[in-house]
Length: 166
Image 1 (cartoon, rainbow, N blue to C red):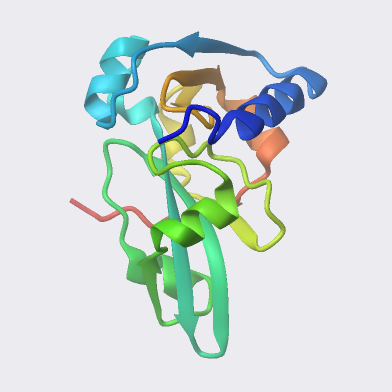
Image 2 (image 1 turned 90 degrees about the horizontal axis):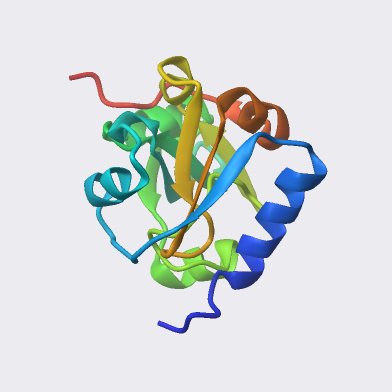
């Protein structure tokens, strides 16, 4: 994977957060793919991690790409997500679609949509337990830890409860 993939997204994200006066910090670290490992490096709880899933919602005449954000310690219920958006089913997008819609490699996608065809939704549980959320910032080697309320104000995701009930 080239180091430049995701670089533009990283710069766009940091510029947006600066411009919106968000309370955040950028952290450089080793590229690790697992949520558990990266939360340990960041010094944050696993539940503070914002995991980004690029999904396809289909059925009932709905064909929508969705960037679904969920707490890293939870599993997504894609059927619940699809139904909440008026569809019947949802599946994860292909690597090519992820690349086209986010400009990032899988695992580095921030919880912000910079593509007009990618609807941003988030599970509210992510914002109820912690004052800060943490996520990869376009690059596997860079994370952002930011104020939860600033995230909600700037990203303005549609809130949909779609985590699996334990």
